[in-house]
Length: 186
Image 1 (cartoon, rainbow, N blue to C red):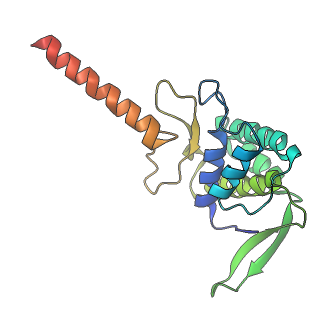
Image 2 (image 1 turned 60 degrees about the vertical axis):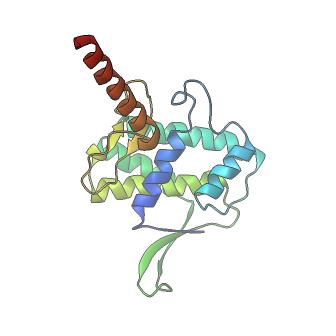
Image 3 (image 1 turned 120 degrees about the horizontal axis):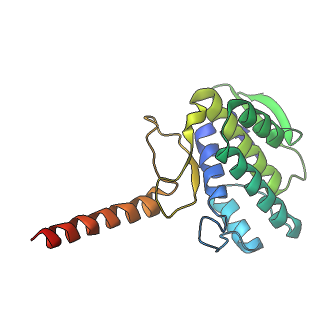
């Protein structure tokens, strides 16, 4: 498996999705409770690494590490933490097979799903720090959500960790409040 170093948008999305599987985001329900759910997460994100029993605990530790980085986004801390995530996982090379040269990192032989996710999260964090800004690491704007995200949108105005879920909940709550206000005023 290769991770292109300039594909930080995809990598940051995987990091966001990973941290938002945690029980604190889902009011106690872990979205990665077992190996089957971890394998499904890896497949959803096109990570072609087989899962092993020891991977689940390693991915849970990685999830906590990435969450801590997003929760405390200073440039030095993000760079140091993301560099640690990517160190000793693979080999950096220049891949010219796609018609244009791209720097990539290839996972070393025998890498685990935790290694692959660590590499992807590290690339995402480093890419966003370099290309966008540390202000792109945010907590969800929904009042009842404890999720976090890395905003890679062009304008940088994303407000919710899961726009389809948290954004819709806020919109429905706002609609109901307006409707109740109109009924109350009438």
